[in-house]
Amino acid sequence: MTTKVHISEEGRFWEPEKFPLIIAGPCSAETEEQVLKTAHMLAKIPSVKAYRAGVWKPRTRPGAFEGLGEKALPWLQKVKQETGLKTAVEVAKPEHVSLALKYDVDILWLGARSVVSPFVVQEIAEALEGSSVTVMVKNPVIPDLNLWVGAIERIYSAGIKNIMAIHRGFHYFEKSPFRNAPMWEIPIELKRLMPQLPIVTDPSHIAGRRDLLQQISQKALDLEMDGLMIESHENPDCALTDAAQQITPESLAKMLGDLVLRQKTGTPDFQSQLEKLRTEIDKLDGELLQILAKRMEITDEIGAYKRDNNITVLQMKRWANILSDRLSIGTHLGLNQSFLEDMLQLIHNESILRQTQILNNKKDGKSSKD
Image (cartoon, rainbow, N blue to C red):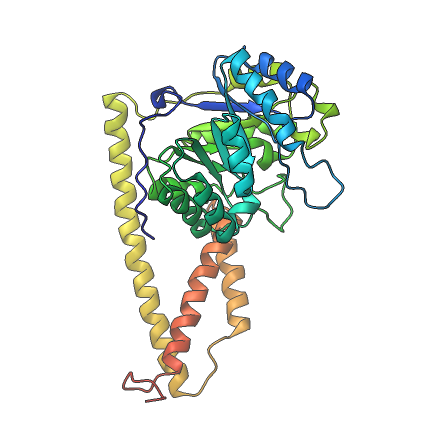
């Protein structure tokens, strides 16, 4: 995957060298009093640079609180005037963009449901043309990196230069302690593809509950994510939306104070030792790849032998034995079982694919359909 997006640091409302960027505020703007009271409390936390509040709430089912819309936007203007905080709201259609810009909202974000649809993203992108607003793009609800990258590219193509990504986790059918599985490998890959793109993690939507916010926030910073967006409400137990995942500004201040900020680079001695260890890993990776290539060569030989003797490719009993044996050996060596299962399944899938291709070819290597 390649991308032509080149994010500039010009015009950012925070100093990139002073990460993490903290964006905080209630899930929803409920009343003017609630919005302003929460904002003034958050403004006392030096690391909080922007105030978020949901004005249009995309609810899963009708009947739930869906936000107050334009009525709440003047309250955010007051927040900016009285506290100096930047303001941020979610937009889901062009009309939202127009109204948010009318009331001088500084940051607009595209929600996870919107990012799933390229049609919706394109409509929002076209409404943003000519604007200098900062735009944040949440990951789609499903774990699809291409959708996320595509949404960012559409916003960039509309002329928006100040873009950030928000990692808010992914819908996951397996049992999990999280509301949305973090799947850290996806934002890490996004960081590799777009190294200049700031990625802000949303622990509130990953966790779904207050007691997990600290560990998710620390994990995000340990993985060099560029900031945090955390839902904070002056009285979270009475919040009209997502009460369980919101915390008071006082709790937020304590949590931020407890986070450990690690250096990205160390002393010369540290870097020297690190390079030695990395060199050893490079060597081992090379050996692993050679072994894997040799394994696939033998897989091809087996495929040809099965083809010549008219034997089916998939041998379930053999695969079950391999899985059981390799998991037993690997876990005994201290390897994680889930990691082993994923790795073995990938190798098995590739082996089946190669053998199937061989089975459908003649001995001379040409397709049986030629």
